[in-house]
Length: 83
Image 1: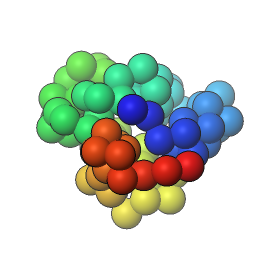
Image 2: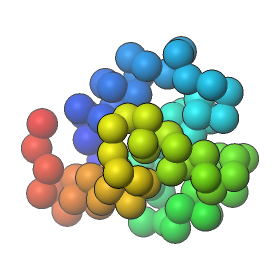
Image 3: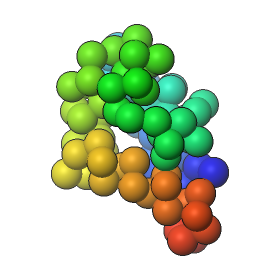
């Protein structure tokens, strides 16, 4: 399940992101379960970007790192996040 607050923010800002961050944003929007369950390195591989791009993407959204963003997706899957 995709946290809707995060989805709206990514969708609103996606066109302003550099190319690699667009790839990350598109991946996150299209694979929310993978964001919650797979390692950041595996997600980066699937998105076709270096792992550092995942971290920079999360930081651009205002999170301390990718693990914080990933935690929102995991909590959403467990039903612990409501929008």
